[in-house]
Image (cartoon, rainbow, N blue to C red):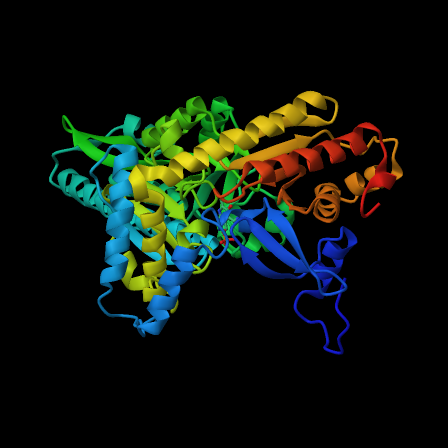
Length: 527
Ligand code: PMP
């Protein structure tokens, strides 16, 4: 409910009103550990267990004391928060520490260069830009090489050392029997064919259900049609690959690939050869899809993606913005399924729930230092967020990685509870998915429910939100559906999650499951 006020409401009033229909527009006034507090009508603080976990940004807990203390120290000591275009040893230390951990998890000593940003989507945008800059530079080199080959063949023909054969003309798609089959006709046709390919806009690959942010370029790689379609004209497009269907990779490649035509002289004859055109800028993949409904990528499909990308020279961008930073028991969830990225994006918990920060990592073999000159942000790589992120890594790595083990152990405990609810309500719960503290429960579609309230919620696209409103008001549990799969509730609490909090969730979920089983929408808090 909106507090009594005479102020105009101008900060997304429509969204607030929509949330209000499910009872979710409460004002949180305090946060600590795994708990958020909101004020009821009498001004009393109501404690709520937070399973939404800032959508993944507070793995270490809300206002974690060690992080708050570090922030206080930094501000008290007058840290130069904004000192752009200077030496940033703290950013360098952070990049080195990230490399140490990534190197350990991937068992590699190849360095990854770090470009810092402010938000998850911004790290994805940096990766997109870097990949396209790299592709542009590879295209320019290819173009030069082709021009050099044409010039040297032209010279050989002029010197009488090579002849244009009908086979060469046919190789260029020209009529081999037509008159005027000279080298210039051939060269002009090759140039025309290649120029068409060079003029193609960049194309990305992404998975169906994938979510990579909502900025102009990143939203085109986010599968959700509602987020993406209105902005289609603003940026490069993606082909969306169905999950767990390796054949689709080859089908899409067959549809989108292009071959450049090159010339050379072989045994006194001009020959036309084919060169693969780098059609795809990059393949974006989440090891566990978050907003798409908590779907874990299988090891087999990850290996197929890896093989496919290596075979066509397309870099793999592993988006660990939601799955990374310890949530699944490792810094990189992808390392646990053997998926290796040429790029990684990290954000959310990197800022410890206090700083807004993100990073994009690029493997040395793909890195273009030119990018450093053309990409920047006023707020990125600042001392405050770098120092906070260093503190986050210190907390994750302390005691031989106790935090990773705790995330995995708490995740297992939470999962056992979700599975026991699922087992007791087989007609209601479709599936429990995820790993570590990144779990989801998908419910069966309720659009055919005998209860009008449940039917309408399902039809209105608000189903998961109505369940969330009920859990909030009746069970003091905060959770949300994933952004693009509204029948799936997400559970991404902090690693401070207690057994008592899990037990409360158990009770809450059994209540909503019983409401669905009994088609008793009138029992819903908002019903
Ligand atoms: N990628 C993934 C996998 C995400 O889950 C998100 C946020 N949900 C983003 C990118 C975008 O991050 P941000 O909201 O910080 O822009």
